[in-house]
Amino acid sequence: MLISRCPKWLLLPKWLLLIVLGAAGALALPPWHLVFFLLPAFAGLALVVFRAATVRSAFIAGWWFGVGHGAAGYYWVANAFLVDQARYGFLAPVAVVGLAAGMAVFPGIAAALAHAAHRFRPTSPLGRVLIFAAMWAASEWLRSWVLTGFPWNLMATVWVFSDEMIQGAAYAGAYGLGLITIAVAALPAVFFWHGERRWIALQTGFGALVLVGIWAAGYHRIDALGPDDVDGVRLRLVQPNIAQHLKWKSDLRLGHVRNQLKLSRNPGKGKPPTHVIWPETSVPYNLSGDRPLRSLMATAVPPRGLLITGAPRLEKLSDGTRRVANSLHALNGTGEIIATYDKKHLVPFGEYVPFRNILKFSKLTAGRLDFTPGTGPSIFDLPGLPPFAALICYEVIFPAEVAEVVAGSRPTWLLNITNDAWFGLSAGPYQHLAAAQLRAVEQGLPLIRVANTGISAVIDANGRIRSSLVLGTAGILDAELPGAHAEPPPYGRFSDALTLLFVIVAIGGFGLLGRRENTTETARFS
Image (cartoon, rainbow, N blue to C red):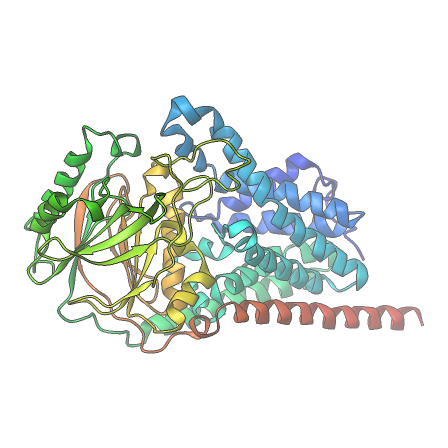
């Protein structure tokens, strides 16, 4: 029986209610982690979706929910437009609302598909929960690919406050862990659909058992003997805390470099570093074409070590045109660049303008030229370091792309350099860090994160933050390089094939419960 006991305010698919529910669900995301808000948010959405009169109205309900969820979760995007307030400040609210509205299409699709599946094959309350969660997970996966993808704030990130809970991503990936999370969060809707007290206890107990099971498995995984630190490697992470509106000023640029050199030479505590790492574009010059600057920077290279830094790279092509890349360089003690990685997955409108022949406006980052995506290798084997995979900025948020990078010749660690100054002191840097933690868990590899304004961190192969620097501060972090797991976990082996498996299993459960429901109804009236 459909929802006879549900309060009318929950049944009405009014846009304001759905926006509030979506925003409430976003409070479970980093840095707030108010996970209990997931229960009213997703149970409420499920009630509205399956109460909807048509597939179209279910889509609209999911879309309004997504608008609230996105506006609360992506509000920090406004900071990027306030860096150059005179030129772009007026776009700040437009960007937040526009991004939220665009990303809300995916919850809308999830809601529409779940509703359509139930109309086609009516099922039990638990079956509705399963198809609802499966379609949400599928929509998250879709969001990571459509229009270059934006898998920011995947539902699994709500658990990064718990080292034990995020271990689920090693087996199910972020999408699979998100599917389980949504299924448990939507379980309270079963009471309104079924209405019997025994179902309240049964569903509550089942949901709690699932979460306890994930936690226990995670506890066992991280309690097992972990990999040892890498011998002979001590890293220095430099966090210069350069404000974005000051970064490219011509009279300050050299000062930014000198400040990082000073931090790099700081005596520190304990053993001296063997390798120094600076953040994304922390050298605001074309480093590959500036020999004097490289010689200056070489003074901060440890003996027999390297300085790894981010910098733009300008290249003049044979036809006279120029291309610019967002690059990572490794410098040795003589100032020679011995390795370069060009960022492959660029930020639309930030590093390049899509459909530039149609859209006649400039990108947010400095310079008139659009950045060009790199095509070279992502894994490097440099002197004194075990092999690592380079990831610049938001390349770390893409589960499948990271899995693809490490799938061939598996590296020993992941290096993510980034400039989160664009986000200010908002939730953005915490959410970015959460994605990095999940990639470490999924691949069973430690991840070193070096950020301009923070949050720089040393993350072990189980996704635990060993040490970090506070957001919005300048400083250094000296740390040993954590070891990697000898073998990749299941998600590291199978990548999004596991996502597909989890979705298929959930859909199969929906189909099985639907058959039981239909059989029960037939028997009842025969």
